[in-house]
Length: 80
Image (cartoon, rainbow, N blue to C red; front, side, top):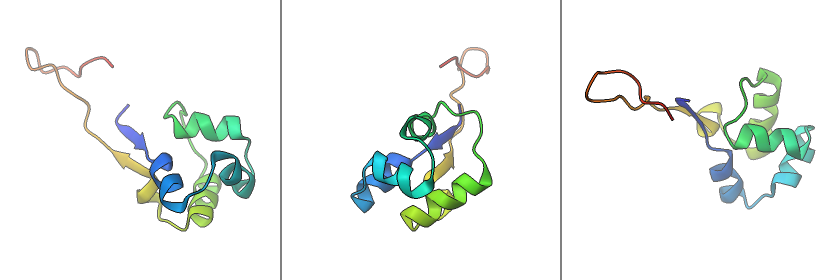
């Protein structure tokens, strides 16, 4: 997926645990792990706002777009 979630980076910068962040945001550690590991299909703006508030950051610090790799031989996106 071309959207990369960088919650790990912000957690490390803030010296905060996943459990502490989950508590501050009001979601379960399991749901935070799904988001953190890039397995989430969507994120609510309210959750994103709560993450930004807890981590004192901007949405762009947590999410970034990365172009999908292309197969040079035929120009199609490579399967991941």
